[in-house]
Amino acid sequence: MLSNSSNENDPQWQNSLDINIPSFTISAAGKVLFKDAQFNISHGRRYGLVGPNGKGKSTLLKMIASKDLILPPRVDFLYVEQEVEADNTPAVDAVLRADKIRWNLLEEEKTLSAAIDAGDEDPKKFSRLQEVLDELNTIGASAAEAKARRILFGLGFDGEMQTKPTKMFSGGWRMRISLARALFIEPTLLMLDEPTNHLDLDAVIWLDNYLLGWKKTLLIVSHDQDFLNSVCDEILHIEDLKLASYRGNYDSFKKAEATKLKQQQKDWEKQESVYVNSNVRAILRQRQRRRSKRTSVSRVHVVLRNKGSYCIGQDTAAMKELIKRPRDTLFKSTFQMLRAFAPSDGGEPGCLQILRETSCHFQPH
Image (cartoon, rainbow, N blue to C red; front, side):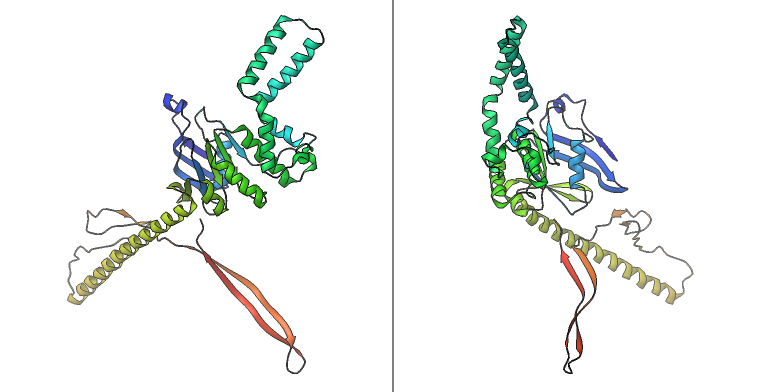
């Protein structure tokens, strides 16, 4: 389920290459992933989308790709998710066909030229052929094949491989062809989900360098921190069902996040100190009243800690939202007892317990 508000009636939004969605909510399988979140990205910047697994990174990209999240009409986009179809199409042609305008013009040129060569003297066909040739020249069609081959070569396809049909390649290699198609057509917004998963080191290095020269907008989901460090100039982090923006690469984000968590810890400790001290004073006053056996009940300085809020004071106390305690993620896994058998001193099998329980502690990005 998704709900979002946009500025569809705003003329400036209609012509924008930036994406500014003031509020959206996404839930999947009964789980809320984003709630009243903002989505703001500027044209020409390279963004890394990070967060713990299962928090909605890929779901957000899919919602954009399915047009459930409404973007400005001038923003054409492409989400690289599936490998190309396995058929008889040569790898290089699979890339070239991604530019449907160029491919259709070339097909029309072939049809018109064949008709004219066969003796058709229809002036409309001559006129249309000239129009097609002019359009092909305008979009630089003659340089397209060389560009497609350079991209394929960078992703690990030698000259012979580029002419092989896609059905001859494994899923991982067809995923490379899909990535090559996206790089070839250069959409205004290119969304990549774990682009380095199917690449060897040489291809990763090439892709890293290629994307550094990318002039349009990139949105990348990746667990490869080195890749994010090199390519991205801004990080979007999923936290508290929102998107928090951090300028700089992944290392800059981690430093800023650590500083933010440290301040949150201080704020939480201060809040806890106020809460504890207030309750101690209330308890002491209650004991004093019991000892003095007063019959009238005075107003007590009460601290209410319920439903994520508390108040300090008397009847007119203002409610204040509780600060959540920042914490790392702790995983505790219990394993069946493993035993190593070895001869004992008497020659009988002995038993040594080597592992009962282990735990790991880490802070997800």
